[in-house]
Image (cartoon, rainbow, N blue to C red; front, top):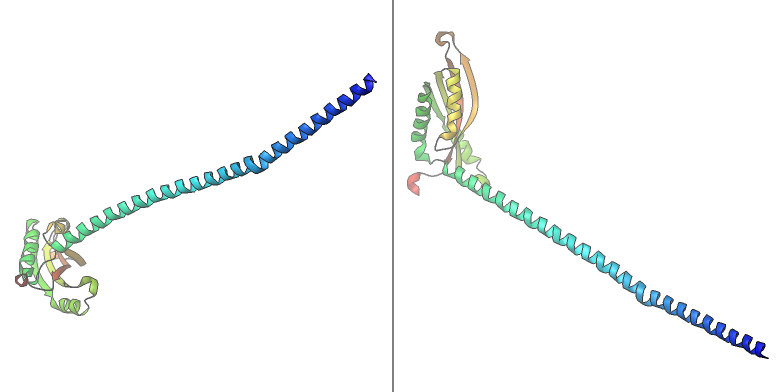
Length: 201
């Protein structure tokens, strides 16, 4: 009788333990699927969103740096344009400009044989004037001078020190036995002029 009672008691205890184990497993599974897994998934989403935000902020900093660098470049270009505009002469300054070119050549022992402004190029420049170059004219001046080859090279190097802008065009070196070791040099200088006189300002 006591044995049967004990067996029944053990069965009840075992049943209780099994039921408790099943309930514990069910609670654990429920906690995992309904609380832990959604939370970890949400954390993963938040982590991805945070990484995206950090990337966007880093990209924004790069963009700001690029804009800043571009602003600096624009400022440099503006200054270059201002310097170039300051070196453009007016029509009535042309004789003085040619005189300065001659004086610069004389410093290096060069003799100017001919100076011929090509006024046809000035007319063509005015007729072909485009909007970006509005108000500017281009005049080609033909120079013929005589001197040592090295002196001519030094003269060309000094042209950028003039207070006005002159661009170098075609250059021809003519060797002549009668003046050796000197040479004759034919070159075109391109001057840029405002399409108005200084007195009109």
